[in-house]
Amino acid sequence: MISDLDTLRRAIEQNQIVPCFQPLTALRSGKITGFELLSRWLHPDWGLVLPENFIPLAEQNGLIWELTQQVMSKAFAAASLLASPLLLSVNISPLQLRDATLVNGIRDLAEAGDFPLDRLMIEITESAMVTDLSRALVVANELRAMGCKLALDDFGTGYSSLAQLQVLPFNELKIDRVFINAMMKTRESRKIVASIIGLGHSLGLVTVAEGVETEAQADMLIWLGCEQAQGWLYGKAVPIDEITGFVVAAPRPISPGMASPGEGW
Ligand code: C2E
Ligand code: MG
Ligand code: MG
Ligand code: MG
Image 1 (cartoon, rainbow, N blue to C red):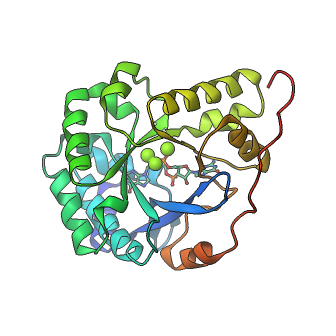
Image 2 (image 1 turned 90 degrees about the vertical axis):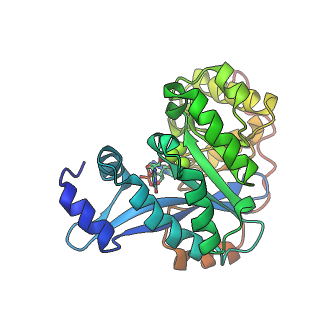
Image 3 (image 1 turned 180 degrees about the vertical axis):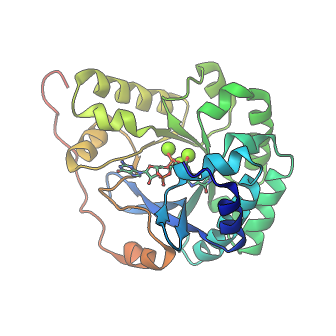
């Protein structure tokens, strides 16, 4: 992690934090359904810096809203060029749930960038839930009332309870990539992924697999009934000008999935 706060402060001032976009794909049809905004720091000397190296620093030092504001306003303006009904997903930090200006702030930024709120998906990481469920509930309801959709990010790693899942108004459940990664290696992992998909469906949620890197994983996920996928198989996070190519590119041919994954899947 970068530890120099002044450097990060300067980076924000100098507009060095930029949005990149990773496609989300409908598993069966191969069609892109939207993009997730993933922040990148383009440092003049260090090159591309990934979020794990600067988001925690921004969170710990009260810079997260400034950073979010910068990257979201660029992302909304850019994403307003995406054809409807493509969605834009954005991550918010658990800490931001405590910020009373968050919801109006997001609305103002989306309006300024001419991006419709009903095509905006807000991703809240599962670990945010445990710390303050009542606050999460207030923010989640406000976001939904404003027209946004909600995704529970990194599911399976954050110890949320089923009781919490039951009360929060999510549209989408994103299965953490640790499970997708392990899925082709052990039968137990496949069973866990199957259970998460079943749980999501029981609650009326669209399920999204994170970190899909191989055709074999995609085929298994189709067989398990998962709707959407995100991962390097479909594309990494790229700057906006590389997206248009993505959207017009031929989708992956319709896949029937596998007839059966065989005994003891
Ligand atoms: P996330 O929300 O779970 O985003 C997905 C992460 O998985 C991204 O990492 C993405 O690049 C990575 N990924 C996607 N497909 C694959 C794959 O097939 N294989 C592998 N190994 N990785 C894949 P990234 O961009 O490094 O972001 C890490 C985390 O940082 C994100 O996890 C998100 O929680 C957070 N983050 C990113 N941008 C922002 C931001 O603007 N604001 C906030 N608050 N958090 C952000
Ligand atoms: Mg996410
Ligand atoms: Mg996230
Ligand atoms: Mg995630």
